[in-house]
Image (tube, rainbow, N blue to C red; front, top):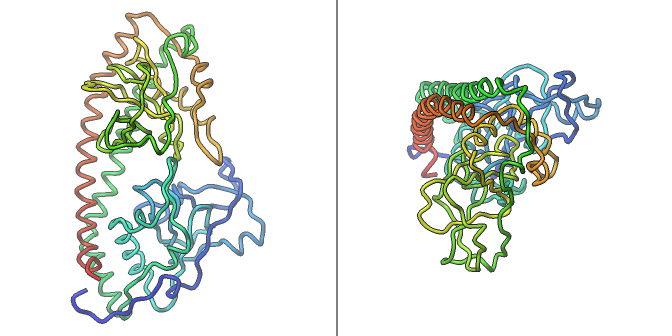
Length: 394
């Protein structure tokens, strides 16, 4: 901070109010009181088009109403998004939802300065080190949030830092937002193309999934089975955006039946996930060079129609079944639901034509998405570098 004078405080000492959000059943009618959710946090702010709705009591409204310049903190999320924050900038009546933490700054700290520093903590991996991690989500204890140490210079200096960061990151934030919009557009375009191709088979005879594929979940193992040697085991974390990521694998040292050793053209599916969006994600196994297996939160499908099925898993019909597995405790696709899911099965020639048509189009879209994702990562690193300039060595 260029040798500027500052005093270090615990976060709870520079806020007027810190608390969890309201736990209430939300409706899908777009009527009622607007509830800020995890999905509402976007680009340092609150996206009011992505709020939930509920009918709150007068007492709940009094307790959980957000004010302008409040900071909303996500303490339960994926590892990547844990610690995401958003500043309330509008006068719209909003209420704090569950799994979010209200941070209302006091007179010692500027809300923009505090939010920039909280972003720095997130990007530096601070919250990931403090968090408890499970298969479905990561969580930071509220006591750890309250005890986070914040360097506070004078308000004049805070405002100067905020102004400089606003200027240096303005273009970066704009590029990040544009790339996020582009990636989402490409994702929706891909799904729209697939849905359009499958619409021609609406009146085709349907078969249950277990009639056209062998389906079973992966192996179970104990902590004591984990070893530095043995067979690598895939988990849901190894499937990211429908692609296989083998950069982080555990190994288990125990005999594994042959049926649990993956082969080329097997389809792997996430049958459990902390996020409904990633539940049901799949990947096709290819270029298997050595024995590799998979855990029981993944499901395997062995079928000669692997390309066709993999595309079907991106259709609205299948996603509808996936959403039926949503619950308050865990999102899952049961083996029975998957086996009895009905899928249209046209002729072999029609299947071949559909896959051929989609392969060409999807290949182009996927390449554009990869390029955009790489550019997004570069801009996000540049944003982090700007924050590090002021906060890293404190």
